[in-house]
Every structure is written in structure tokens, then in C-alpha cells.
Image (cartoon, rainbow, N blue to C red; front, side, top):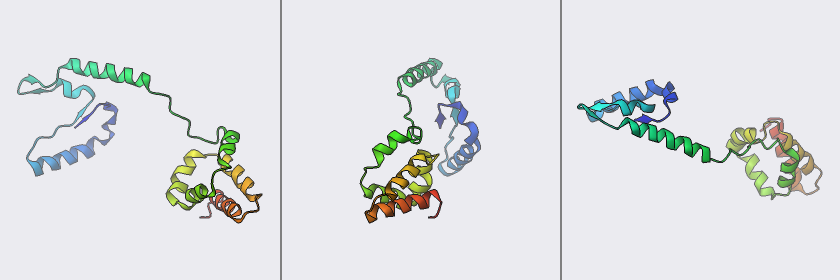
Length: 149
């Protein structure tokens, strides 16, 4: 097993334990490598991989990293007014799906709306509407904000 990033050693004991089990069950000799360790390995006196390959891998990964786009901002509360304007006219079915799903409510919404600014704006907006579906959505949002679910 090979981890390119040698900072992943924190799970070393877990992988070592699993590889010991594999060795017993399969009668093989698994090895664990981090970073460039595999490139300094000799098997029967023969270099397994030329060390130059490691340098080339690092070079390509460095160039690849430079071409990656910036991560998009996922905190939607940062531009709360803009996000509110985009979300307020979504179909009620979207809100029902969001607030009726425990996993989304507990794991996703806190990431997207950490300050709950947009959610508070949506709750106030839907509370002013007369249609029952919107008052129910406002209640769902309020329950989420008050952690009453």
C-alpha cells in the first residue's frame, strides 16, 4: 500500500494491523509505503522504481495543483442578501426535502449556513406569505433554528 502524502502516517498502526492480517490469511508479504519510501526499496538487490520517478511524480503533482480551480465558497451566509434572493423563489418541494431529511438538516445545513443568516431571512419571508405551504416551511425553518426537530 502506498500513500503519496507522507503526512498520512497517523493511520499507520491501523494499516499495519490490517496488513498483518492479510499476511496471515493470504501468505503474502504486504508492505506499507509513505511518500518516497517505495522508491528507495530494493527487491532482490534490484531497484524497484527509479528514484527519478518520484521526482517526476512530485513535479507533475505540483503542476497539476497549480491548475486546479479555487474551491468555491460554501458558506452561503457570506453573501446572505444575494443568496436569499436566489433561494426565496425556489419551489416549496425543495424546502420540504431539505428540512425533512435528518442527514441534510444535521450535516449539510450547518456547513452551508453556519451563521443561519439566510435561513432567518427565509423564515421571516415565508412567515409573511398567506399560503399554508409557506407558513409550514417557515415553521420547519424556525424549528431548525430553534433545534426543535
